[in-house]
Image (cartoon, helix red, strand yellow):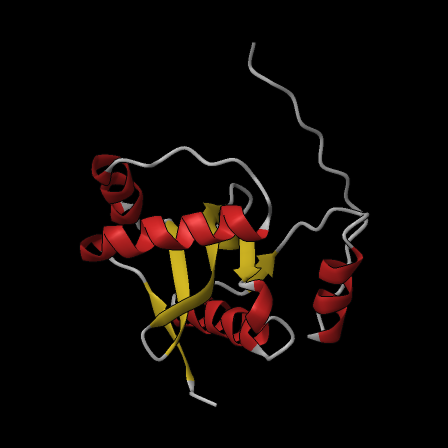
Length: 148
């Protein structure tokens, strides 16, 4: 079995980012519109947006996206992990754990002590995963609404 490498994607890797976001939509069984090079470039240029990709050799097998959120009660930030996805044939092989460890290391390197991730209540696989890696559940409910 090949070693898994985790890499934070930079501006020059916009094509790879597009592939990663496509992989995520596929894993989540969501519809996806093609993203332009300009849009991907703008996204990857943001210091507060992180895209981490997992590779087995040259093959993209998973990744995550996260956002650095500045706080208003103290001069600090938290990291909000938005998406974590691993190709189905590579799930349950430790890749998700490696991605979560990598994002924690990135946060630590930037002096950010706290990270959080949402999980749909009915997504038992995700909830079991976060418990298994030692994360604690918070009693929080997210609400959504359209802008129109």
